[in-house]
Structures are given as C-alpha cells and as structure tokens.
Image (cartoon, rainbow, N blue to C red; front, top):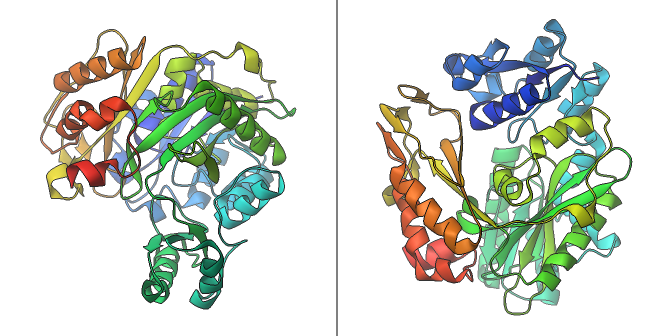
Length: 447
C-alpha cells in the first residue's frame, strides 16, 4: 500500500500532486534542482531532496538520482507529473525493478503509445479511425513520395517519438518534400534522440479534441468527456475548454466510446488522453495520439465532472478498483483554462524569465488557480515558462467566459511579461465567441 509518494517534477503540477496526496493521507517527498530549492512545492512537501543543478538533463531527467532519492527515503511510489520522465518507459521499468510503484500506466503501454507511428497502427487494427498516411515510420523522402501519390498533398511529416510541434513539417508540393523530410528528421533527432518520422495527410483547419480517460488494473475504463484544445501557437496549447462548444451530443458520445475502446485495446490502467483531429464541416474525426500521463489541461475536465483525476491516478496505482460508472459521470456547466506563461506575446512569445515582484491572484465564484509561484520567487530560464493555470467554471459557456475575463483582469503579475493581456484579447474575439475556431485561430486572427 502506498503511504509515501516521491514527486519527480516541479512547479504547479508538483503542488497539485502534493495537495492530492495529503488529502489521501499520504506523505510526500519532493526532488528538486538547485535553482528550485526555495520553490513553493519544497515548502509544501513533507521532505525535499536536491538531485542536481538547474539543467533538466542533470536533475529532473537524471532518473538514477531520482531513484536513489526514492530508495533513501523509503518512498512507496513515484509520481512523474507531466513532461520530464512521465512518458519514459525505461524509468517506469526501473521503478518496477526497485519495487517502487510508478504512478502511471505499464511501461509496455508507454512504449507502444509513445511511438506515434506504432500507436496509429495499433489503433487502426482495432477499428479506431486514423488520419490517412504511412503505415509506420519512413526512412527516406522517396518512400514519402510513394505515399503522397496515394493520399495527395498537403501532407505533414511528424516525429514518431515527438510532441509539442517538434519534428513536424507541412508539405504542399513535391518541390518541398525532400527538404521537409530532412528538416523533420533532423529536428526529431535533436529534440528526442530519435530521427524516426512518419507521414500523414495534412488536415487544414481542424479542431484538436481530446478525450480524458481513466482505467484501473481490472479492465474498467471510463471517459470524462472531451476538451477542446484548438487554440495553439506552434502546436503549443494556450487555452482549453470543456466541453467543446462545437461538438454535438451524438459526436461526443461516439468519440467517448471510441476513446474507451482505444484504451481497452492496450489494457490502459491510469489517467490518460486520446487525442483526435475533428473536421467541423464533415464532423469526421481521426485518432492522432495517446498521452499516457496526466495533462496540463486536466483541471477543465475536473471542473465539469467533479472528479479529482490526480487522486484517482494515485488510487488506481494503489490497486483500487474504479468506483466510477460511465452512466453516472455527468458533465455540469462549462470550464475554460488559460495558461499564464512568462512570455512576451508581442515578441513571438519569447520566454521572459525573472523575479515576480508583485502577485495578486484572482478569486471569487467559479475561479481556480493552479500555480507554484509566490511574490519574490524566480521564474528560471531552464524550464517551461508557465507561471500559473487560471481556470474559470460557469453554468454555461457565456458565464465561464465572463468569469475568465473578470479573473484575468484581477490577475496582476509584476516583474516580468506574461500572456494575461493576450488571453483577454482571445476572449473578446468574435470567432472565439462562436466556438467554431480551429487550430488556425492564432495565425488567422492575431498574426
């Protein structure tokens, strides 16, 4: 039984996990780099251990040090959060070898779903709709050419081991094909240590829809409806909402059923997400990937269902059966999340690390702030630039939008530039208000 959890992460997700663990009556140990020694999470955890210098490769990705820390404090389990080691099958296997519970799915599932080309092939076998493209990875632009002759332009190269928009290149004609292949493969190698890429038909202007799922170790799997994550820049999400304002109940039910089917096909046993591209015009949708971890935007699903996903993640890892039945999970109201980043929207969203000199956090009905910052703390240049996640719930989308606007205006962060004003502009945009925006929204309306 889990009684002590080591948290192998930082920032707001570390704080979020500490809170969930405390409510479950569990002790917490936080590992941190030297630059994070005074973080809010270190102050909240029962114990903290320094595991290395600021660069992630020497600390949060140096899993030998993390495992040594877990053994030294006799931790029963490790929660990886998101990013860093959350989807590293070798880390999950090492935890198992040391008899430390990895709070996440089995390592073989992480491995299969982490290879996006392989995941797509698996889903296709189980009848899950996928975007037309290559059956697995390709090793030359000539092979890509033969596929393009079948599916037509435009196409997109994607890194098989990737995410976050890295190792991706859109191709509109044959003259661009060879250079695009080389670029995608090279960037994939530099970013993920794996140059493998695959080809898909490029769907212009889709919705990015993801279904939140929970599965236990006894074959029980449920979904918690969808999140609309279409507002992105360079394939990085900026704002998410649940439920999607442009999906009807019939499509919603169909997507949920297919997501559960996809999760069952790999015997999934944790919190996870099935991601789809959705064509507003045809109402067709296609599987693109599975994320085998908790996601940044999980709060909007929690707000509309009342389900604490982090607690369930821990309870599932502890061997408990899901006490949730699909028919009993109801969506209530509407939720929106804005990622407040230390970035300059007027300078191509360039990171703006520095010290927060003043912090005024919004509140009031329906407002939630997930954050790991406080006045006079530093946002270091070594990691993701997120400062906080601002979540607004309303009885309907209109109320959620109005509450979010009010909360953004209350939110004051001095000492560095943030995306707060940019989010206000998004919420006032007429296309956003219709709910029919797509992944091209930022490009079409702001640049």
